[in-house]
Image 1 (tube, one colour):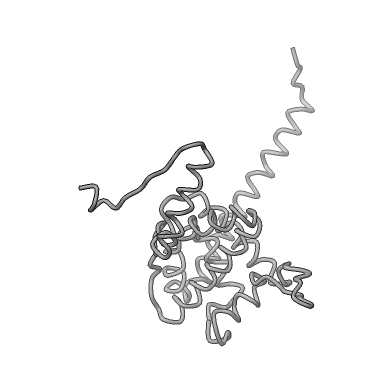
Image 2 (cartoon, helix red, strand yellow):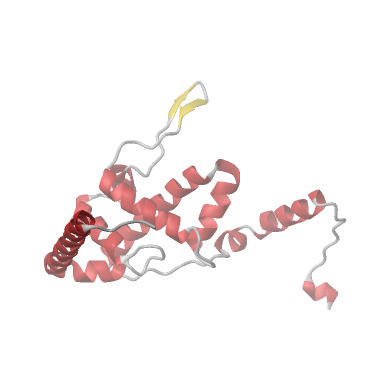
Length: 204
């Protein structure tokens, strides 16, 4: 059996005191954040309606952009400034690099958390976008694409003063139903099924 002596008790109390001090400091900082965020409460209330964006992520977006979209001539300017637009170095028709340009690291980090969170949701536009891009370009590029789409939404929402309206998880299917149908048929055929389809009207 282990032994817990006076020295161990001293160390345990020291660590517990540190935890208490840090907890108190976090509580004070959280309260202070609420005070300084009060002028931006309306902007925060709009931003958190975007799936995947928590209050803390919204706070980072506001802190790093100032919550003022008039600083950015367009949504694309905001996305580029934040570093969510893929760079392109093309010569003679050959793309040499598609790395994202350097941007605001704090905003980029917060958006990454939000994008990863929303990628696991169901029946949302951002989750559908993530799956669609990840299937042929990989998850990292899909995350960047979702970050970009989120910032586009933020710019438009704060500019117009409107809440987020999700296009839905079936957005891309409804956008190009023939492509979705052909992809589904191709997947079934690769699994060894002979596929015959007919419209529901004809089947009835």
